[in-house]
Image (cartoon, rainbow, N blue to C red; front, side):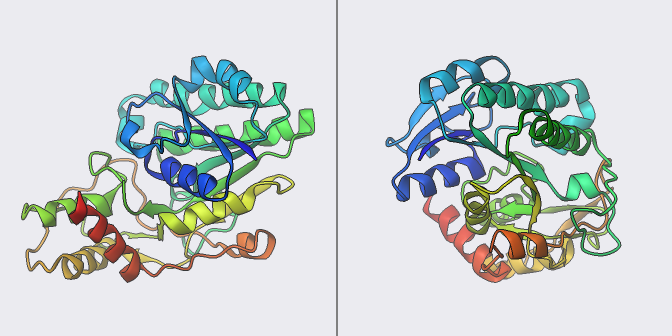
Length: 301
């Protein structure tokens, strides 16, 4: 396959690039390197340094991809609260640019959306047809981008797929972005620095290992459109997560507690059963194993 990965120098995108190369694909990457790293991109891939908002058409013309894995995004909830217009520009307008470039080349788009930020507060594992109540501009923008994918499918007969990720973690995740709570915990524990929990720590999340997410992204290729949750379906409180990170790092230092931040839900977990039935995908890596892989990768840096 000829594949293009937007955001392919980032945390999840670079792992998708590696998986595509491992199966023998011709891979191009479009990334402006704002949060991604050139070092994450294999020399076997072609890196186009540019922005999805302005350079998508040119890169599609050069790569002529059969499939585009669209992972480029403004992915920080805090930034979206502070700069909602910028967040919408990247996540909505940027996605439209990718869709239009894809339409010109009959390219299927597999889009990385978000589960927690779209569903908002969950009283049970959220299904794809559950109420969508985003509590941050980031979630609103991702939901709007999903609607553009669905609209392009109706208008142009395309087969674009949206994947709602749970809380993804693993090697290469940046602790500088607030969404990477596991990366933050482990990096601080490795440096013997204080760790912070915002709120009382009883808030829950569905933590899914990046390797599992990559398998789900590739499983969506060629599917006939739709929206799918990718997560474990299991809830872990931030307090329990911190304890698991402490055990992984061999630390005894307790966390420090601070006031909760705006735009965050208290309970976030997705139901991945549709992906299991239609994509033949399910998460396989336990939290303990995923934390160990992440910790070992961090220690090698």
